[in-house]
Length: 159
Image (cartoon, rainbow, N blue to C red):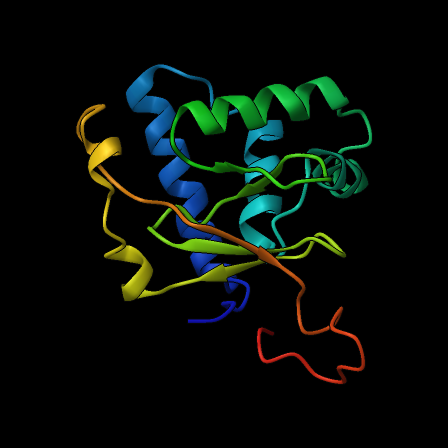
């Protein structure tokens, strides 16, 4: 139920190859910049924001612009390859793990931790919501204080 480790290089390359295939199928160019932005996001288990992705990719591609990173992240989101995550006080964060899961957001430090839970997956949709239309999935974002930010905590059971 807790945070998963970062992907290994073969898993990262598989995700990049899936991205290239998706681009071909949809008539979108799989440019080097787009591929490197995705590679950086997929390699991270920390749900980085656009500025963090920009800084990291810029180490490999010094000429990349912020605009390219932001536009690419929007494109990846539109393609369903990444998910935009909201948090209360922080910039939007992104997640390349698109299988169904939930998140715990620390309101103190902004850390986002993946949560897999069958209980949350089966969360009952209230009748008032069901009346609005068909619910395809339920996404839960738990907010609180991570173990690292707990007063007096030495270890976190969430990490």
